[in-house]
Amino acid sequence: MSNDFWVKTGQEHIMKNVGRLPLVLTRGEGSRVWDADGKEYIDFLTGISVNNFGHCNPDITVALTRQAEKIIHVSNYFYLEEQIKVAEELAKLTGYSQVYFANSGAEVNEAALKLARKYGKVRLGGKYQIVTAQHSFHGRTYGAISATGQPKYQENFKPIVPGFVYAEFNNLDSWKAAINDETCAIMLELVQGEGGVNPAEPHFISGLIDLCRKNDLLFMVDEVQTGLGRTGKHFAYEHYGFMPDLITIAKSLGGGIPCGALLVNEKANVLTPGDHSTTVGGGGMAFAAALATLKLLQEPGLMASVVKKGQYIKETWGSWCNEVSAIKDLRGLGMMLALELKVPSKQVMLACLDAGLIVNAVTETTLRILPALNIEEDDLDEGLQIMKSVLKQF
Ligand SMILES: Cc1ncc(COP(=O)(O)O)c(C=O)c1O
Image (tube, rainbow, N blue to C red; front, side):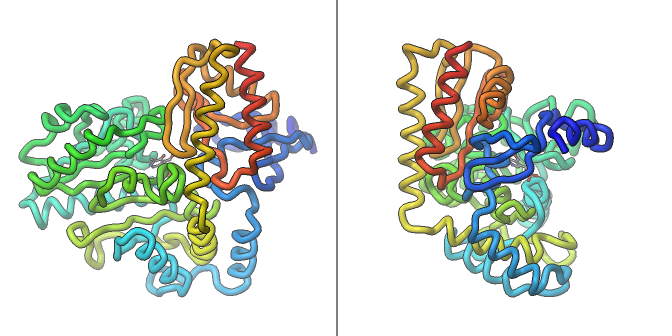
């Protein structure tokens, strides 16, 4: 059946809750995917930083196949061997000794927000307010949209959860003003993803660390998009030389199988039996894929090559300035990168798609790329070449 046939059938039955593109992807391998008509695309988006080791990575596929024949789900009344191994591996990688597993970024952020409220109750005499950043994104559940400092995600769903205050990203005075006698925690992304790929300034983060220390606040970092190697370090907080009280991760952790994790230090370890839970919370398939993913992530030289490829992309973009007039600016960290355009990013994204390249219009004027961390140099060059020729037309 053709791409058009599947799109039409899909449109009849699948809710229009997102602006889905009229494209049915049927197969993927490494940094390439094919649609239902057999057209080939280079993928610079990796399912929004989920397929970070390429589509159908053989190590992940083998782990999944073996696990499917062994055990898939046991409920949260029991442990799974693979779950314990992932917890152990994450503890070794980060230094956080306690983990809670769930199925998505939004879900682990919900857990973090509940944890912050409990911390305020039991450690700070009932303080409950959480300060988050303007232009942030923390997911689509109620707590997560309430933490998200972008009115467009909240508008149709009011009233949202009370107790959130939004401060300006990279403006310490704004956070000082937002923190008051009711504040128990702050939460932010170190590179804002959906807000347009905005890295935090180091002096801003050191100021926030001081504020949290002085006021006994929990410093919560959402690493759902930045974590697991995306920025050229295993976790973005490593760029800033500190360890938050808790982090949340998801996206690539389960290699495409839903899995999220909330990792906490001693100070934040306040949840007790009955406080929070989920039926599946990752599950056998996700944990098997996570073990394979964490092994791939720790391959010697991988982080150095992410840094190198990220620099190469930025230099390549920079070298187009005489031929491409649509570019205003470029920014990002590691392989979480964006071009700020003088033209509508959606039009560029659609033209790229037409030319066989998947990129993302993350804001009206920002074009984001999140290529596989292990993308082959040839695929990277071919994708960049397509981007250049498309951008030259604008
Ligand atoms: C920083 C951040 N937090 C949370 C989420 C929500 O994750 P999920 O879509 O898995 O619920 C996202 C998703 O893009 C994200 O980028």
